[in-house]
Image (cartoon, rainbow, N blue to C red; front, side, top):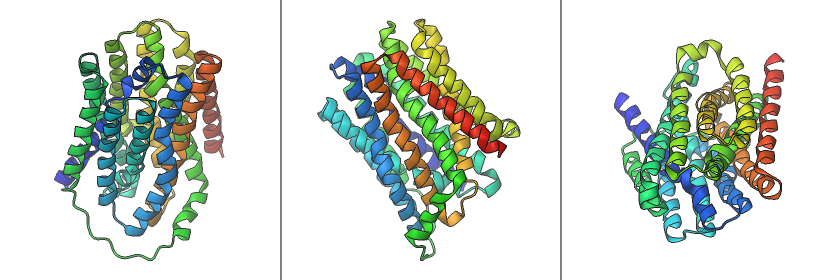
Length: 378
């Protein structure tokens, strides 16, 4: 059991390494090709489109099959295939197609999550979620280290080669996952989809939409461009992304601790939403590079704590046999934010100003804070 958990968490890290090793330099690279902010927003948003369309069907199919290994292997394979397009079509169209494939890979994250959390008792679901998110962020962090060390010397092509290798290695390790044969069930799609009317699931899916949408619009894309506009070198851009991921890893470890559990989601979710609001207000207004660098702590807190708690809170009232479907709905819903918010941010930045675009994101975070406060009070 212990060996299987270690193997699985290694797969998780390799998978997310493959998905994110090129991310710190994606926006600067596309900008250097003369691609507009609005088009970059569409390319970044494409990553969420596949997830938005596929996650709920994948969740239903996983619940009906009662198995996850094939979905996990498919995700690992797609993460590597995506970067093949980035190598052979290093332009807007190539990156658009690649991000659709990366989104398809991330759509399989449902099975990663459910497969792992099913090995924990119900009262330890928050810790299990925190643990898998920790290794998720660790894979991204390793990717950011490699990209920072290699981009200036080797360029985008070699970052994409590392992505292919990461996805391929995750696939090979995935072949050794052991999964018990499920008992046949006759669960109808109508019954499985009935969980999608759960109010708690909707509430925390919306909170995850805010967190993931803002993360994809800022830290994973336009914040890197803001740093470049302030005069930051490629190395500093990479260090900023590394610092963000390091804080995400640390906060994910903190989220799975007993100390964090004492305050619980009722305290942490609204607190971190306020922090994200402040981040969006200050980042485009500060021209001091070390200041922007330090502000990356706040989205790290959101990725590590807010996302972990939003996931476990969304799943709190879900029956075991509907877990994959509920996770599919949850992840498809927040993929809307990953798709629309980068597109809207890019359009506002192109037509008005980057500060206005980030202020728009700050208002969304504030709206989430108010909603979750009302939810917990009721």
